Length: 110
Length: 117
Image 1 (cartoon, each protein chain N blue to C red):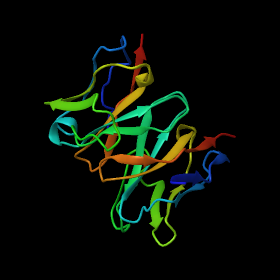
Image 2 (image 1 turned 30 degrees about the horizontal axis):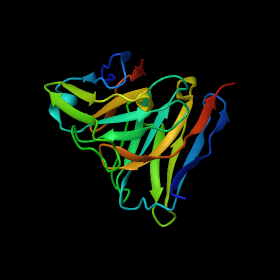
Image 3 (image 1 turned 120 degrees about the vertical axis):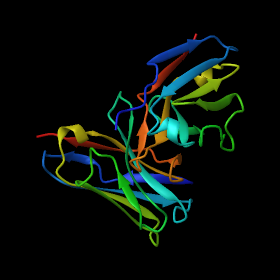
Image 4 (image 1 turned 30 degrees about the vertical axis):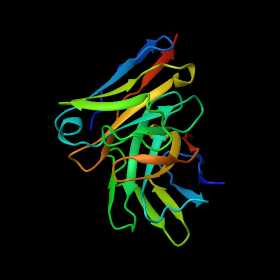
């Protein structure tokens, strides 16, 4: 199972919005509404930000939102803040009854 | 404190075995799917395995299938990962996580496994 494709890096200024894409195939992202997004700060464990494409866990800021179109899922962060600078990973359920992560995207807040 | 604590990591020779444990304190895991996810320092996350709440259903990444076994003891609130035939590619920080069948909502801090002679 190949990793989902994410841009290596994205950047934005405080207050702006950014979108991170996560591209798979019809065997994973496109075939199921089971895409999740995780935030990971250096030296820390990952934190779930979005599950099931669009669901935001309790305690996660509503500045974070998820969507999907075809084989590509997206994470949008609005009103960028310095604390949002981190690595972001998507993951999807696959038709092999497994999960697969994306390669990760480093978000820089300028 | 509410936490998942991994243990059992360390240095092991190629071809060797290691058993990781994940102990839950202040948090119930018996009603949840549990996952193992690994990460080579400085690299990305890789899903390894998952197990359902009663331990009757498991699945594995192709890279570890046949070598790793995930199990759980709900009476002890613990999760395990038996790792056999270890190779250098298995060197990573191993995280346990609680969640659903398709997402991980609560993570431990990880334990480092180093496979080297």
